[in-house]
Image (cartoon, rainbow, N blue to C red; front, side, top):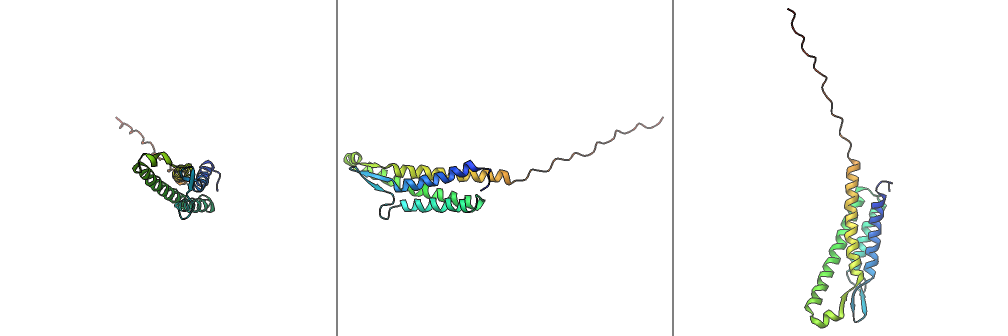
Length: 156
């Protein structure tokens, strides 16, 4: 990866790492027991795949445009999965009554995966915007026509 935009590259790869950590963390807590995003066939595996594929392709392409697009798609996919799961879980808690609301909580892993996936997508967008401004050549300098000589008065 080139030196320019190195901070954004770290941001993107760090966000992907946090999305994976969140996927393995608790997505729900019920009676003190937590259920992780990757327990069984839960959707945490989709977040892991999206974050890993997006970040590894970004890293493997040395930060080229195609890799950044893959990272953007990975961030969007992770965001979609976690947002869907969080929304469904919150709806179930809200409609479950007072007892459910007292016993069930959304876990930090789901929230971390959601925020990290959004961050990964934003980092990819920023990286693509930086690439766009550095790849565009400067416009040629404006040329001015040569000055026109003032007409000489006719001889008397």
